[in-house]
Length: 405
Image (cartoon, rainbow, N blue to C red; front, side, top):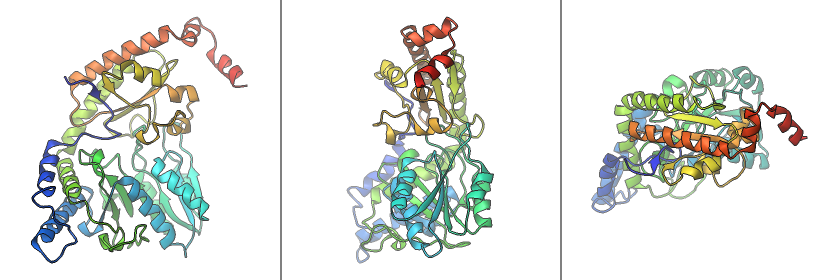
């Protein structure tokens, strides 16, 4: 077993060796610019991009022409939301999203508020799901977009995408979803799910970093976006810039592998995830965050009461790679806004660990993780005055409410 054990696949996945193998020739031998239309090197690169576009589209049930390559999901989120906001400004300026969205969506919405946009941030219940009645009630004549993620990056909860789409269609509103954590992990089909625009990324599905895609529906309805980067008019005029051919080739290969192996991967990973979860939830005062059923098969988010999450991670950081929340907000010492939105206290949000299992996770690694985390929790609680008071029968809620006041 190789140390440290990697259980942070929500932050990024290791590249599959088969993906690297597909990419290598496009760094050296086939190095052409896909926009060079007047010689063989360019034709070769363009052909490779076209093939990758087909591979990506096939994974999500789309047409190849509906795939716009970007530098990743963050750029795709920005292009989707800002692109709709500008293109459909004549219809309205109102966007509906959710408080537990990724920062790439929330920060983009905050930016649009400064430009006169009106944003409704839907709350979630304590299991992480939005209320569909609240969503429909929030729609008004000026609403141009509903932006709700497919599956959450911290707790793995899967939203009711088809139902959200039905509501959007009923009111003539576009539906955008950030499906970065879902693509390649569970079946996602843009036709069956009624998705108009969808963002995802290569490095979350065993592909390379620095490449992603935006699905943009071409018919029923035809979606139009205002480009956010001007230049040579690449990618159907929506995203200018020289294409990252090796990255796109790798992204395409990664999508093909997920299409072929996703079902078997998910089944195996879920068994390991459940084993990890069942063992850790045997520890006293330990709680699962988010909906237990409607979630991704590889994700578990657990709070260990009376233990500081950062201290817990530091106690085994040499042996395991884990996270207390999103990789994009790990520089912040603030408690996870996702866990706070579920109704968790600051203390409970700080006391959580996010487990992201993956294609290369082994049972031996899960056994090791159970052993290490269990030992660390017991050790830290031995040093905790709060734990001692709890064990002595002191009413901790009254103490915490007194401290708060």
